[in-house]
Length: 102
Image (cartoon, rainbow, N blue to C red; front, top):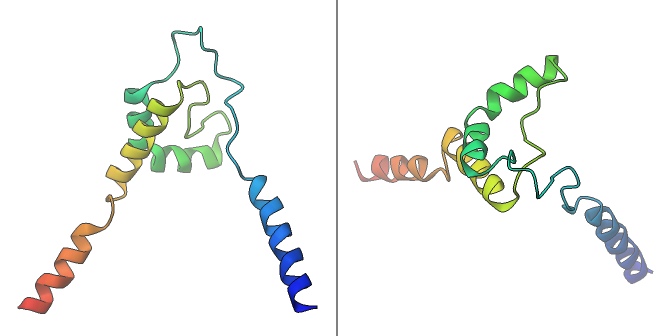
Protein backbone atom coordinates (compact mmCIF):
# COMPACT_ATOMS: atom_id res chain seq x y z
CA UNK A 1 0.00 0.00 0.00
CA UNK A 2 2.83 2.36 0.85
CA UNK A 3 4.58 1.71 -2.49
CA UNK A 4 1.39 2.48 -4.40
CA UNK A 5 0.95 5.75 -2.49
CA UNK A 6 4.55 6.76 -3.24
CA UNK A 7 4.12 5.88 -6.93
CA UNK A 8 0.91 7.92 -7.20
CA UNK A 9 2.53 10.85 -5.41
CA UNK A 10 5.54 10.67 -7.74
CA UNK A 11 3.28 10.66 -10.82
CA UNK A 12 1.34 13.68 -9.52
CA UNK A 13 4.58 15.59 -8.85
CA UNK A 14 5.91 14.76 -12.33
CA UNK A 15 2.69 15.91 -14.00
CA UNK A 16 2.74 19.15 -11.98
CA UNK A 17 6.41 19.72 -12.86
CA UNK A 18 5.75 19.35 -16.59
CA UNK A 19 3.30 22.23 -16.34
CA UNK A 20 6.22 24.45 -15.30
CA UNK A 21 8.44 23.49 -18.22
CA UNK A 22 9.55 26.29 -20.50
CA UNK A 23 8.00 26.39 -23.93
CA UNK A 24 8.71 28.21 -27.17
CA UNK A 25 8.42 31.99 -27.34
CA UNK A 26 5.35 32.33 -29.55
CA UNK A 27 5.55 36.13 -29.60
CA UNK A 28 9.09 36.21 -30.99
CA UNK A 29 9.30 36.93 -34.68
CA UNK A 30 12.58 35.68 -36.19
CA UNK A 31 12.31 38.15 -39.07
CA UNK A 32 11.97 41.13 -36.75
CA UNK A 33 15.29 43.00 -36.38
CA UNK A 34 13.91 44.76 -33.30
CA UNK A 35 14.24 41.67 -31.09
CA UNK A 36 15.91 42.20 -27.74
CA UNK A 37 19.42 40.73 -27.55
CA UNK A 38 22.19 40.37 -24.97
CA UNK A 39 22.64 44.06 -24.16
CA UNK A 40 18.95 44.75 -23.68
CA UNK A 41 18.71 41.59 -21.57
CA UNK A 42 21.59 42.82 -19.42
CA UNK A 43 19.85 46.17 -18.98
CA UNK A 44 16.54 44.51 -18.10
CA UNK A 45 18.41 42.37 -15.54
CA UNK A 46 19.91 45.51 -13.96
CA UNK A 47 16.58 47.28 -13.66
CA UNK A 48 14.52 44.19 -12.78
CA UNK A 49 14.03 45.04 -9.05
CA UNK A 50 12.73 48.51 -9.92
CA UNK A 51 10.67 47.25 -12.85
CA UNK A 52 9.10 44.62 -10.59
CA UNK A 53 8.00 47.22 -8.05
CA UNK A 54 6.60 49.48 -10.78
CA UNK A 55 4.84 46.52 -12.43
CA UNK A 56 2.85 45.95 -9.24
CA UNK A 57 1.13 49.30 -9.81
CA UNK A 58 1.25 49.68 -13.60
CA UNK A 59 0.14 46.72 -15.75
CA UNK A 60 1.82 48.15 -18.87
CA UNK A 61 5.29 47.57 -17.36
CA UNK A 62 6.88 44.12 -17.39
CA UNK A 63 10.27 42.95 -16.16
CA UNK A 64 11.01 40.63 -19.09
CA UNK A 65 10.94 41.37 -22.83
CA UNK A 66 8.84 38.72 -24.57
CA UNK A 67 10.05 39.61 -28.07
CA UNK A 68 13.65 38.49 -27.53
CA UNK A 69 16.14 36.45 -29.50
CA UNK A 70 16.30 33.59 -27.01
CA UNK A 71 19.53 32.41 -25.44
CA UNK A 72 21.54 35.62 -25.63
CA UNK A 73 18.74 37.71 -24.12
CA UNK A 74 18.24 35.15 -21.35
CA UNK A 75 21.99 35.07 -20.64
CA UNK A 76 22.16 38.86 -20.46
CA UNK A 77 19.08 39.04 -18.25
CA UNK A 78 20.40 36.44 -15.80
CA UNK A 79 23.87 38.04 -15.82
CA UNK A 80 22.35 41.43 -15.01
CA UNK A 81 20.18 39.98 -12.25
CA UNK A 82 23.15 38.16 -10.73
CA UNK A 83 25.22 41.36 -10.74
CA UNK A 84 22.46 43.33 -9.04
CA UNK A 85 21.69 40.67 -6.43
CA UNK A 86 25.32 39.98 -5.58
CA UNK A 87 26.24 36.96 -7.66
CA UNK A 88 26.86 33.67 -5.91
CA UNK A 89 27.47 34.98 -2.39
CA UNK A 90 31.20 34.22 -2.47
CA UNK A 91 31.96 37.47 -0.66
CA UNK A 92 29.86 36.50 2.34
CA UNK A 93 31.68 33.18 2.55
CA UNK A 94 35.07 34.91 2.39
CA UNK A 95 34.17 37.37 5.17
CA UNK A 96 33.15 34.50 7.49
CA UNK A 97 36.47 32.76 6.87
CA UNK A 98 38.33 36.01 7.54
CA UNK A 99 36.57 36.43 10.91
CA UNK A 100 37.51 32.89 11.96
CA UNK A 101 41.18 33.50 11.20
CA UNK A 102 41.36 36.71 13.26
